[in-house]
Figure (cartoon, rainbow, N blue to C red):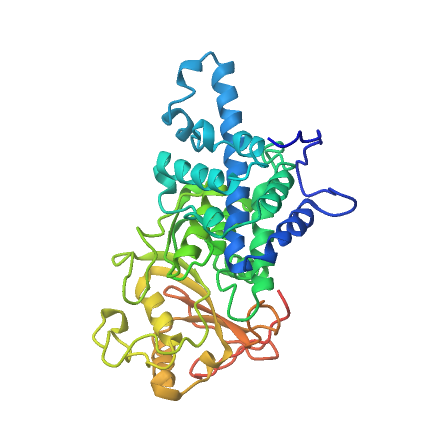
Length: 420
């Protein structure tokens, strides 16, 4: 090690750290220094992986100390005695202490990659969750990576058992990365206000929760928060999801792991339409933010006989909005409820048979409520968006722009809501 690190106090929350900056902002400023040679779409995986490693290490060290204090020192290297408490077992060279002590070595990027790969290999629940050789193959400046490691070392992620410190930091970073990547990037992240509104509307207390395009897993995190805030039991819900982009699939697995949330995101990343990871699933709740107005999602006669379109027309090739809607309808159980985000055009478009599909959805009494949201809620697009709420157990409700109930038979439905 090239020098000794000066002692500093550990920050255990999001209170001020370096002047009047929050822990999150201080970390973001440090992480931004990596942008000199690495795109944000790449370096976010390095930053979030380090945050995960610090959190996993803090939990590991605490559990290890507990075993020693209980006189069970013979079990400190047995994976089972960590897994039983929802803690990941970390071999010595995968622990944060080892990484931090070697932070000023020229091969620190390789050491980080090795640590992450070893953790994933040792803990089956993390299979396919951690980035693959990002630190070493991106050619990061060792000095900048060392500075980031020092900043993350300031966070004591387990000091306050009542505060989700690392979860808040992780969520903050996901949002900041989405904002910095701008249009064409950041699809992995749905603004927290939208996700929270969906959870409050569909109330996922108990049952199976599904997101067919789960991004970084924000819908699942908010569902669990909803259950906990209403004094429910997290064990009463089970989580199923799918994500097409490999790196985002890993982000979702890490996001759930950080919070100790068990979820089935499928064995691999895959296209929901062509490689459905949960073909037999019937969900109690569906929450989703599908890609807006997705073009050329299938070619020609592909999927024309797919059972997911049963009872409706085949969704058009040029826009996947109704393919997503019909996919979600097919996944609802007999009493299921779905809440999802789509472009505003989905409420009134009549092109390529979309109006006919919408009419059948209404005639089947599935529409519970619809809302048109204000603009500028999303980091990556200015397209006006709306929320759809479908239910197999409630009578249809449509609200106009004055907040009044209107006739159930219309195919264009709008509620002008205030910003969530």
